[in-house]
Length: 98
Image (tube, rainbow, N blue to C red; front, side):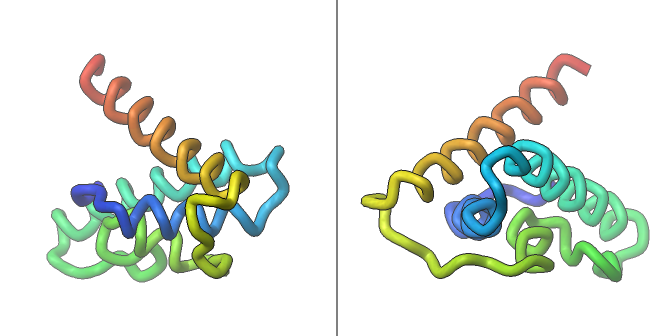
């Protein structure tokens, strides 16, 4: 996956805001996997992935509907933002162990 910036996390969190809380973990993992797949595709072909874009988490997220971006006063948004960060940390930890 391309380097993750604030906008990537925000876009993914905004996607998660639109789904049932019970589906958020699975969807977050899926967006990260799509970004990784797209990044590998770009590296191999030099072209953007036809479905998942340029390998950024933002591109994977923007394939879905995003909620309007709330402020950090919104507890649900904070929970979604935190969830994305946790999944990114877990992904990096697992990559370094392999």
